[in-house]
Length: 126
Image 1 (cartoon, rainbow, N blue to C red):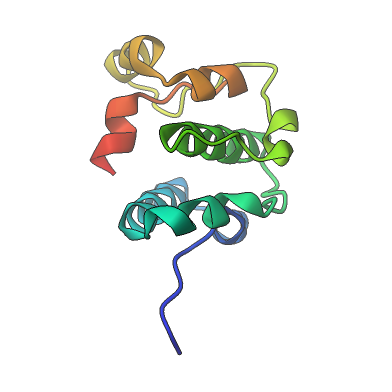
Image 2 (image 1 turned 135 degrees about the vertical axis):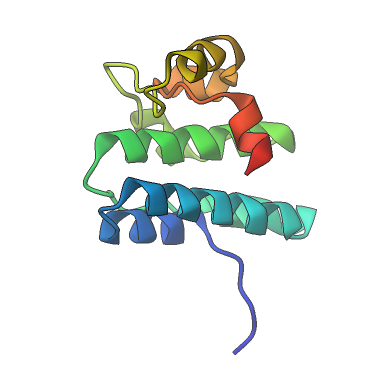
């Protein structure tokens, strides 16, 4: 079997099957690592398919924010499915006051738009 990079739809399936938030984040970081290693011309394919609902609107919004953010990095329009994945109440994944403040200052525009406050530094460190 040949290697295939994880898609956002595949990530959503991992998130929905895993109740442990630490492991869910490990899946997010794994997706980002695989995405970065993928050929530039294939990256948009990893974002295109609409992810199934995870069962948690926060993770669904994060997937939308992630797709929009990554698409903007390669100067592409975000997939249409990202539009509906917006939280009414902002989500700060970290409960640490210092990380929350960092997220307020450094959250990428796509993440702020979707109501997910995660620092760009956290995305780069993944």
